[in-house]
Image (cartoon, rainbow, N blue to C red):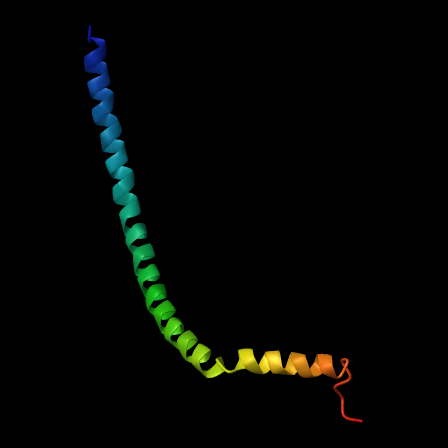
Length: 82
């Protein structure tokens, strides 16, 4: 009759084999995901450079919006030409 340690070692080996089989099955999917994420990162980097260009072009808007708001308040909100 096998003792407890022998049974545990046997199950350990079986469990490790099951784990390895599952990981082997999921490995191509994990690689596919990594490939997709790598493409997404490249696109994101491209978008980031465009975002910086937008910020540069729109930098004067902050002060312009403040000026527009001050004028609107000074006119009591009546900004339409009569």
